[in-house]
Image 1: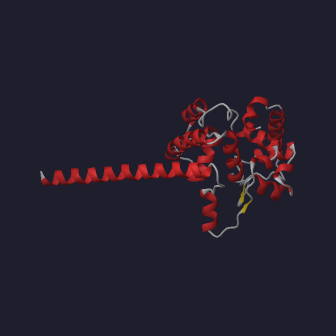
Image 2: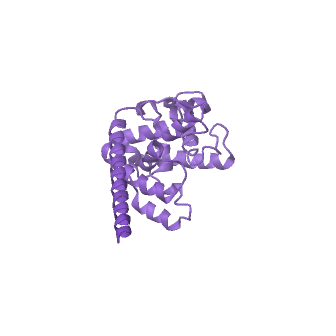
Image 3: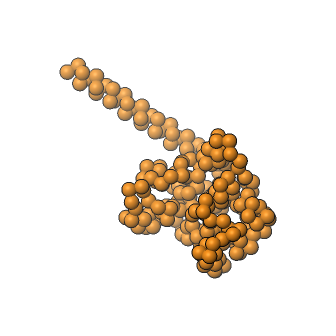
Length: 231
């Protein structure tokens, strides 16, 4: 009887501690999301690179200094319903989860707010645990930030090659120009690098990469309503 009471007490204490820790973590995320609406953020991956002593190329710039071609190409390529949804594309997520394997859902389930949440707070590897945390963070980000701010932060945190973070660093690294001077083809090559930046080089694209970029460029040039929330 005494041992059962002790076990119940330990279980209750552990549960209260877990709930308290979860609430503290949620409040911490909420506070950072509010702060990052106004201040340039840093990603967990950049922090990891710094801790490992690796070189990081990063130049944070406002959305106005990023080519409209790149904004359109990234939205068309990564999240065509970005201007419509509230952080999560539920129909696309259900479809991808239905096809997911044991390692979790593929990149196709992620909207730009979800990828922004991952870059800001989480880890890069795919898993159901990460996705469960990522979804409420994406909803909160979309609630607290304007669409232009979400896209600005995403474009400044995305990795475009080992140690190359953000559109400005990528434009300088691959094309030796600022992000605001990127043309339609260069923007499409950068946008289509995002799903696999360790194996795609926008300055020297493979035939397959170049073909994909050409299709994205054509769609981006006629994107219209798909990008009007960030114009």
